[in-house]
Amino acid sequence: MSSEIIPFPTKRYNIILADPPWHFSSGIRSSKKIGAKFQYYTPDTTIGNGKYATMADEEIKSLPVATILDRDAAIFLWTTDAHLPIAIEVLSDWGAPYKTIAFIWNKKERSGKQVCYYGKWTMKGSEICLLGTKGRAHSFIKSHKVRQLIEAPRDRNLHSKKPAIVRDKIVELLGDLPRIELFARERVEGWDAWGDEVG
Image (cartoon, rainbow, N blue to C red):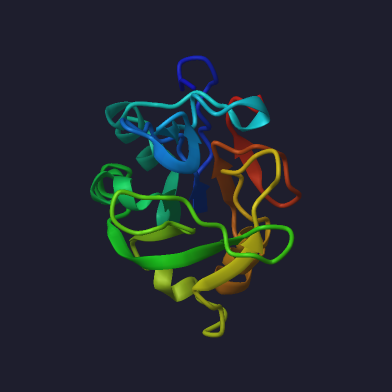
């Protein structure tokens, strides 16, 4: 995906939700073997509807997100544990330095069983959403009851698609403010959307 292909927004927002297509150099080890070797999956090699193009770290960092931040704003940035250091840099480059982990998505199968991927060190089954802020974004807080942990099933066909409830939790936390989802997979009422899957 490239911001050169899809014009970047010009409107200013108080809330930005972003799920960049991070590039994985080595992939995620599967529990499946072909012969004596484990299979490795990456977003750009996943078979079927889960496949999508990725972006280099520098491409993500160079997106002009800072130009669409209002004076007081919050960015919710999905990342993986492997991309955590660069994700924190991304927030700073986008104009909203890292503050905390907003959400942890504990992935479930439709059956309710915990999703587990083999990692290099421990088995993985969660993704994190970081929070970066600009100005007095804390003045928007409407509720102190929004929980960090979200347990929700992953999409059967689009494993990286984040649960819709996250959008609701963001609005519950900060209110009905101008907001956009970057790298969006669908259009949702109340949210502007930018990404190659929504045009």
